[in-house]
Length: 314
Image 1 (cartoon, rainbow, N blue to C red):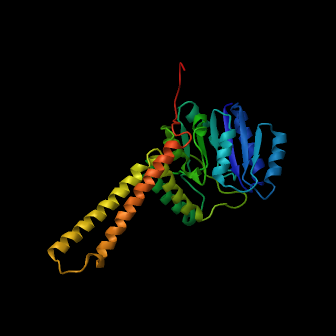
Image 2 (cartoon, rainbow, N blue to C red):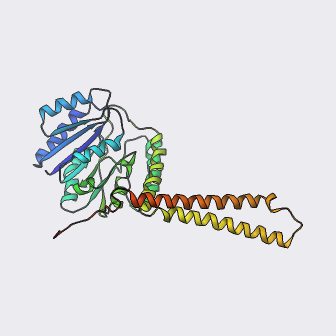
């Protein structure tokens, strides 16, 4: 199959018929074999009824329905599991992503051999104060931490090689960091394409201000897991050593000060004593956390599971 188009949705019954018809026209025009995977993230409107109606009219449409709302990341993860196409394209269901971008996105993956292409909504129709400015700050922070120089990590319009979506797991709110997940999984050829951003035609946005707080928390989490999941002692041990060394030098200073001035304050009456004690205790706790994490990492299922490009003669 040439294409799998994964569309996560929540309460988008008005836009689905137009979106699916548009995708069908583009795929038929270019003679692609394709499937449209509509993942209903626990909608409370008529979205699932609409999906069933669309399936009857077009056998290339498939539906997945969640019992309740789990979030976009869960919807994408299930869509990736079900995808059969050699190229997988994701887009939002609100018609702000244009299906006319599909041929060029597919070409970049199939012919230019990119692993992942992320859309860049260079010209946006969102509210500048509530969406554009926070998005720029978020993207700048993600570029700095991940080393991946994309302008728009959170763009829903992306294209992937099939191997990419079968090698990553998207959970929590990690859909914002799929390029980072792909990089940690060993896929290096990640590109970007300027795509059309359309004004919302139906419904209202489903995301609020809390997504930015969650986004930065997930960025910290994915950075830690990506860098230290196989060697947690390198993180905990570093900070544990720093804390204990600070405690040691404070203690040494207090002892020298006491030798120089024996009639001064008692060691236990000085603030430095308690600071040194706290640093040493914290350092020991960090070391203990590192040892426990190493035991968990070494004995976890799949600890030696690495992405292998190819096997032969086995």
